[in-house]
Image (spheres, rainbow, N blue to C red):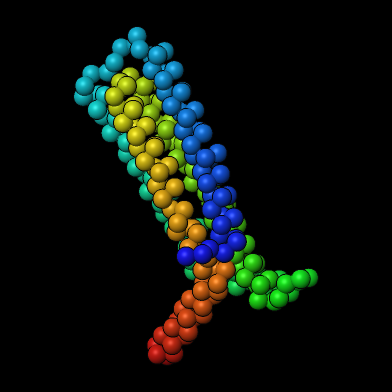
Length: 201
């Protein structure tokens, strides 16, 4: 299916953001982990039980970061929330412009609002993932051993891959905003809510 120009532009920006805010810092974490492993190689390792306890504690922190990011992402990029932002902005922004029809201007504006909401969340979500990478370094410093540290690094890589897997969803949201489907959904929700309130009365 042919995508609109704003959606194609978003795809390029999302991939650039993911490379800069997710992949490059992850490489830095990997280099830092390798350096930390070399520095602490001669340090005494914790007993098996204490090493496991440290690993599970850091894994729990990583899981909480993952869950928090998942929740925040769902909130920031929720179609209803974006549709409401579009509605408020369209009420303030006068339609029309030189060389374009009113419908084209409104479509571009809707897609621009949705894109800004998504691109605003992407770097923040990538930054959250670095906390998972840091737990791997802390695992080495704490004496839990390299095996557990690299397992935590796998969790960090999985998190960044999760962010990448969200890109098609983001593109669908912007495409829906461009075609006006988000506005239509918001109007349907308002009508349904109004009917429910009238029934309760």
